[in-house]
Amino acid sequence: MTAARPVIIAGNWKMHTTPADAGELATTIARRVGEVDVVRVICPPFVCLAAVGDALAGTGVAVGAQNVHHELAGAYTGEVSAPMLVSLASWVILGHSERRRDAGETDELIGRKLGRAIEVGLRPILCVGEQLAERDAGQAPNVVQAQLHGALEGRDAGALLDAGLVIAYEPVWAIGTGRNAQGSDAAGMADTIRTVLASIGFGERSEEVPILYGGSVTAANIPEFLAEPSIDGALVGGASLKPDEMAGIVGRAGVTARARRQAGALGAPSGS
Image 1 (cartoon, rainbow, N blue to C red):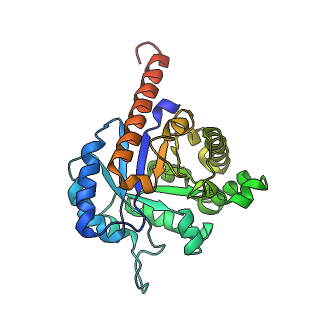
Image 2 (cartoon, helix red, strand yellow):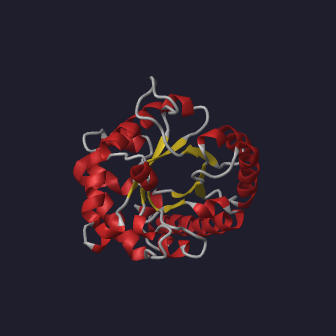
């Protein structure tokens, strides 16, 4: 089943760049990440979406937004709705740990945002992950299970699969703390995530959902995570602003994508 899942590298620029420099940076990165075997996405700030979209046109690199509002329209000053994003982006990040922390986003609210995103055709990257105290208390699987149930339970699994749902596992304790996650940590959580998906209506098709790792990803550590068959790429933070780092990350992802495709072909029945 692994060979059927795409390998995805999504760069989250967070609150960095301006419209004046974002297009140039996107152009530079696109020139360096020509791995067509990898799904490549850049998620700049809202104000840079148009500039980045223009820069990436025809490159094969997609544009994503970092957030979306849970209503389609209304008196929500300063917010951005899903319909507003349709002409500017094709992907959207939802439930990022920084949104949960700084904006107090709940699982229920994130689920509503997810519904709005798929209504308009945005491909969602749903983020889940535990804090350090939760990891140390042995509660990491329970925390992630609760996040998935809160955002996904009661939603049509078929519609989510058709929308191309992607899950990003963010061990918050491994982001900027100096404490590193291991490939086995990510793989274990990926297994937990797919078990939860199977239990809430995805069934065997839970194996079709790509799971990314997001926790201080660099060109140096990405091989450890991509070596795990259950991990299908990465949600990259600070390194996504550095063309050399992104080139290294995407280059390694390309090696993984081709190896998985070859393994799938070798395992296919004769004549398939």
